[in-house]
Image (cartoon, rainbow, N blue to C red):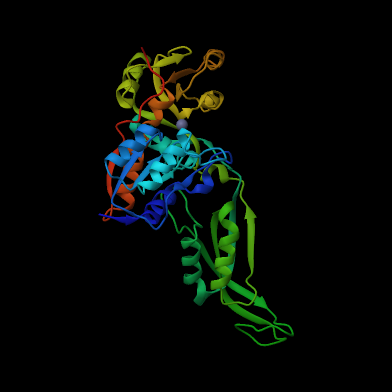
Length: 372
Ligand SMILES: [Zn+2]
C-alpha cells in the first residue's frame, strides 16, 4: 500500500502536533517532500550512517526517527563530513526523513503513555502538564438556526476536546437583544429598532494555541455582522490538559520492590537496570519519563510515586533520590526510548487502517552505551 508522505505526517501530528515540541527542538520533515509516495518505511530511534545504509539496502522511501538528525543550524552540506555524506545518500536514493521528538514525548497519548501502558499502569495521568493555565472557555451567542453549524465549526477546529472525547460543547437557549445603527447590515432586524431574538449561548473549552484560528473560523461561519463572544481564562486548565512530560499511574496488582525490578526488566526488555534510593516494600504508584527525566524526581515524590523510572541518571541525581526518599530506576535513555519504533508502528496502524505502508524496524539502530 502506498500513501503520500503528507498523509503519514498528518496521522502522526494528529496525536503529536509540532507545536507541542520544546522551543530548542527541531522536529518535522527534515529531508524529502510531503508529496512523495511512501510504500515502505523504516522506524528508528536515531539516524546514523548504518541506519541510512540499511534504509537504502531495504529500499525504503522514508525513515521516521525520534531524535532529530538535523538538530542545530546546519551550516554546510559539504560531503567531506559525515552529515553531508548522509544527506547526499538520502537525497540520491530519494529517502525522506521525518522526526517526532519532544512533541511525541509530550503528546497525551505519545511515547510516555505507550511506556506507561507497557509497564502495566492504570489510571494514567501526565506527570508535568505543559502550559497548564493556557486553556480558555469560548462562549458564542448564535441565532438558534445557526447553532448546529457553529458547534460543528468549534469541534472541527479543536475546541471541546476533553480526554477521549471531542466536540464537547454546552448549549443553553435565551433571548438576545440588539439595535442596528446607521451603517449596519443586520442579518435579522431593522435599523434603529430594538430586536429580541431567540439565541443560543454555546460554550466550549479551547487550548490557547488554537484560540485565534478558532475565533476566525467561527466568525466566517456566523451569520451576524458582529459576532458576540466571550473568552474566559480557565483556572482548571491543568486538570484538562494531558499533554506534557512523563506519566504517573498505578499497578493493578501492587508488588514488592524486588519483584518490580524483575517486572521492569521484563517489560522494557533490559539486561541491566541501575537504581538509587531505598527500595520500597510495596510498589503501587509508578512515575515514568522517557529519555533523561531526572528532573522529575521532585515531582514524582510530590505526586506520591513509589518509584520513578527514567534514563541517564547521574551521580547527583542518585543523591537527590536518597535525600528525597524516593526510589529511582535508570532504565537507560536507549532502554526507555527504543520503544519509540513500536509506538510509531501502533500510531500509524491505527491512523491509516486501510492504507498503512510496510513498516520495518531498523536492525542497525543500537544503544551507543555498552555494558561490558
Ligand atoms: Zn531521547
